[in-house]
Image 1 (cartoon, rainbow, N blue to C red):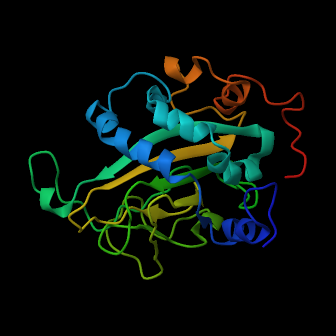
Image 2 (spheres, rainbow, N blue to C red):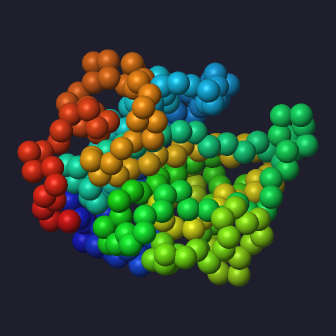
Image 3 (cartoon, rainbow, N blue to C red):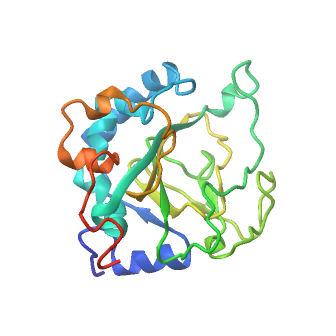
Length: 253
């Protein structure tokens, strides 16, 4: 395989354009993954919802270290180059099946089909935004792997109604092992799987895009820890420092 600027290979770029998704391996070393997993439960318990700061997951050192790492940035940077921006960063979670029907959790539907971002006329070869799902627990058959409709990002009209709940005959499940990630076009129709295992399904989701796109929660103040002693690279990644003089002239895309 031929590597593109140290990130996605040419074959992976082709898959991302044609199918709308690609699986990534070796995205982080195990010490970094372990630190994120060790921090995960505390971050979740401290209230992912209701936080009034943009990119509030960066309150935690383990999650800051991940976005500072070359291996985490390699794939999205090979798409966006110096224009790469982290638009959003949040936790995903499903408890083990034994905890369904407790006061805190209700049994999920089989599917929840949706697109995360939709731009009319967006070119699949030039995605305005990409999602990355990194799981900190294995997601295989019974633990609810993400399911996608390959190629659905190429159509203006989705093959299913938004938030419809039944499996689709053309769906493909993407099982991931600890530390693997799924990178996909934000226009791709996808759904979380239903966790039937007795283990939690913990993951981290990131939204990447061009530097000139408004981030999620743009009206909110940015998390103070995100910028304290931040490198120039991180400031550019957070959209706080302009990456290049020719902001709207993207070479080599």
